[in-house]
Image (cartoon, rainbow, N blue to C red; front, side):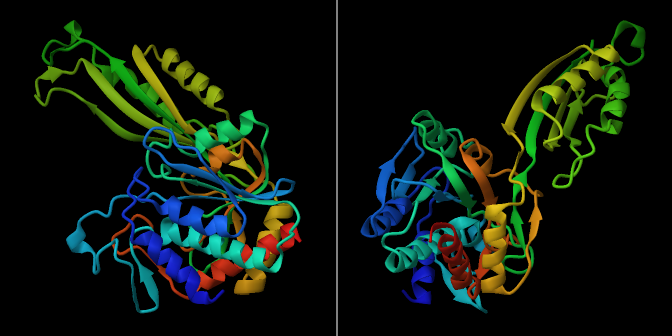
Length: 377
């Protein structure tokens, strides 16, 4: 195994334009390599989404790497310095869509497995990979469906490493040991349209909602905890009216979102919002959508192993964090005792000219390999 093999695999994956949910046979490429080192490959495809569950070993503990082969659209091609699906090296970096999010992570774990199995063919426990092609999309037919299947047949994961890009400045400077939940509301405040000169004949939904909005914005939903900041309430869109200056609108639409900690619950937040709206006599319809529950892995065996591996390979101390958006970890935590996210820099994810440092690629593979050594030897 040479350092270039991880880079070569990352390039092969980036060269496939696997925009959600079109896998472009990325998973087939991975499966072929994993089969050669004794992994059993199980395809779990739902709708247009391709998923694989690969496992080597039948006993515990189970160490699982989770990732996604899908990427977001490239955006305006003319703005890329080089074509997004033609991986290129320049100025010490690997460029291409998916370089950071997250094809390099997948390549690093696969080559880490190859080195580990070669050195430890009779290793303890099991190594698994859970790979989907629908993380960047609606995520309805991806990891969540695979977890349902595994849960139904009693399979669990002891230690899960999600390869999401987590580094801020230097590889290994931050890992995620949890994420906030995301709860969105689509609120329609009902009024009565009328002429602005005859307000007594109309009901202005902007006016009826205003006191409730003030209270919602000022409410302290929780205080957070040692791992999470306080739950936040934010309005993303608000609109009403016909465009005319002499018409009182008949409806007001408000879209808002909670990013909530483990100190709050989905049901509790809903109840409190309804209570505030009802308190102010607002007439409304409210549709809810929860895209993820908060999850947390307390500092313990897996975080310690990650810290040790990062210190050994990168020579730095790592920070535990729960900041950022959601990931498929929100689904996997249902069957995983301990779960973290650990990957390359997130500085260019979803951007034009997405890239990773070339020197970080063998380092990340070495970090994953060191974790396998400590968990399964």
